Length: 250
Image (cartoon, rainbow, N blue to C red):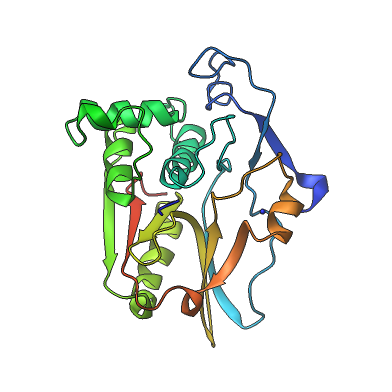
């Protein structure tokens, strides 16, 4: 379903659905104080995937790592798409100009309410454990942040190399995280960068499926929750959709 740095440079933020990050009241959407930790820029310090890589493009700015259960809500098995949206929203909150919307990243229930409000989902969607993907992500970001998105469709995983140039251009000119998901490979994942070399390309993947106590950057990287993945290692028979937020060009 579109369902683990170096310690001296580690940044963390208290979980509050982004309100504290945006200079708002440090409480959750349910007015409950959180003491858990979200890691900022969990990819910092990760070495390039191969010494032959001569072109590497990554997000510009900062984002938070949202994952299963990070707000004490057990969404294992269905919430990975929501968590990737939250990571994308954290980037918008932290990096957009002051002249545009800078609301906190939405909670799981706020994402569901948004999709019902705009008519994409029926009322029965509220409180459900229904999966969401890149299309729903584009609707939520457009509605809450006034940021349109481009959906890039790749028919087969073996054709993912066709998306590499689009991703290089996106990270260089827009700088925001990308959401990726498919059918056979229906696990939602954030894409924070792309590297290309003589022997192929790699995606910098932020995997929201971690569930457990907070981890620091070193642990997230060593356990593979934030890592470079060879494009050829992805499911070659799955189609993939990528949601690219069309933020202002840098």
